[in-house]
Amino acid sequence: MTHPLSRRSVLRGAGAALALPVLQAMVPVRRTTLDAPRRLAFVYVPNGVHMPDWTPPKEGQLELSPLLAPLAAQRSSLLVLSGLVHDKARPNGDGPGDHARAAATFLTGAQALKTDGPIRAGISADQLAARAIGDRTRLRSIELGCEAGRLGGQCDSGYSCAYSNSISWSGPHTPLGKEVDPRLAFDRLFRDGESGWTEAQRAARNRRRKSVLDLVGDEAKRLESKLGPEDRRKLEEYQSGVRELERRIQFAGDRAAQAGFERPDEVPGAFAELAQLQFKLLAVAFATDTTRIATVMLANEGSGRSYPEVGAPEGHHELSHHGGDPDKLRKIAAINRLHVEQFATLLESLSADDGGAPLLDRCLIAYGSAISDGDRHNHDELPIVLAGKGGGSLESGRHVRVPPDTPCANLWLALLARVGVDAPTLGDSTGRLEL
Image (tube, rainbow, N blue to C red; front, top):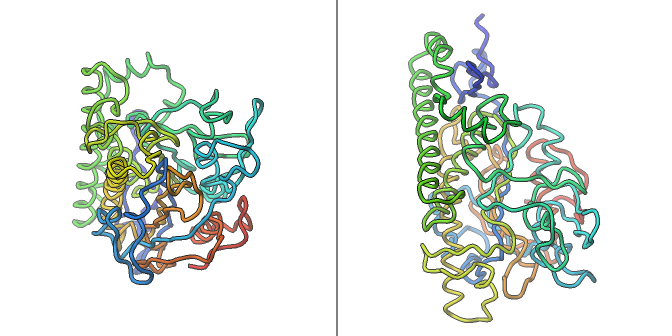
C-alpha cells in the first residue's frame, strides 16, 4: 500500500524550506476525510472603537453593524460577543496608564506592574497554546505587527513601552517582539538559517537572492511527477501565490527605499498595503501548517499614527479623545472601518480550500481591543469578534451578549480548549465561556 504524503512535508533546497498546502496525496487511502489541525490567531486594534457603529443591533442571528459590514462575505463564520470585560486593564489603584494596561492585559488577563524596575504581566493565551501544541509545527508561533515599537523605556504614565507594544508574553516577565517587516517575516517562515544575520549579510543575500521557488525547483519537479492531476493543479496555484507574495514584498521594499523612509506606514496608503502583506503571510503560514498560532497588532496601543487616506490626518490617539465631537467621531469610525477592511482580507485568504473545506472553518481568529471607547478608557463592553468555526466546534453567524462582568480571559480559555489546549486558568479567568 502506498503511504500518504506527510502533511508536514516541505520542499527543500539551497537553504530554503517551503511547506506544502494540503494535497489529496496527504490523505490516507483508507480514509475519506482529513483530520485537519485547528489554528488560533489574535488580531489587536488600539485605542478602542466607535461602539455605536460596532455593536450589532440585536442578539441572535447576526445582523452586521456599519463597522462590521466589510466582513459580510464571511458573516456565516462570525460570532460577535458583547459585554466582555478586562478588569485588570482598569487602574485598580495604579492611576493612569489605560493604554499600556489594555495591551498587556488583552491576552494575559493579568494586571501589568507599574514600576521602574522589572516588568510583570502574565503568560498570554497564544503562548499557552505555543507551549502545548507549538512543537507540532516548524514554528511554535508567529508574532506580526504593522507598527514598530521598542520594548524598553516608558510610553504611558510610568508603564514600560513593552506593555503598549506587545500582546504576546511567553512568561510574566517576557514580552515577545513582533515582526513588522514582511520581508523578514517571510524569511522566518520560509527560509532556514537567517534569524541571526546582520543587515549587511541580508543585503549581500538580497543581491544574489533567488525566489524560494527557484531554490526548491528540482524537488518540486520530482514531487509533481508523483502527484495526480488535481494535486498538480493545486501545487501550481500555490506556487503562483508564493511567487506573487514575493513580488509584492519586494515591490513594497523598493518603493519604501525610493521614498527615503524605512517603514511602509510612513506614506499615504502604505498602512493598508503592509497590513494586507502581513495577513497574507499569516494565511500562507496557516495553509502550509508552518505554524498554528499567531498574533497581529495592527498598531501599538496608544498609537498616534495618522490615516489621511480615510480623511483622518490627525493622530489616532488624539482623535480617540473625541469628547463627543461629531467630526472626531466620524474620523474614528473611518479608522475603525479601515482596520476591519484589512482584517477582511485575511478572512478572504483563509476561505480557500483546505482539504475539502475552507481553511477558515478550521480556524479561530479573534479580532478586537481591550478598550471600548477611547475617550472614556473603559474596559467593559469590549469590541470582540470571532471568525472561523474551530473545526465545527463553534456555532457562528450569531451576536451573543455574555453575562455581566464576564472576563475576556474566559473566552480565551474556551478558544484554547477548542484547539486542544487544556488550560485550567488564565489571568483573572473564572472558567471557560460557554459558546
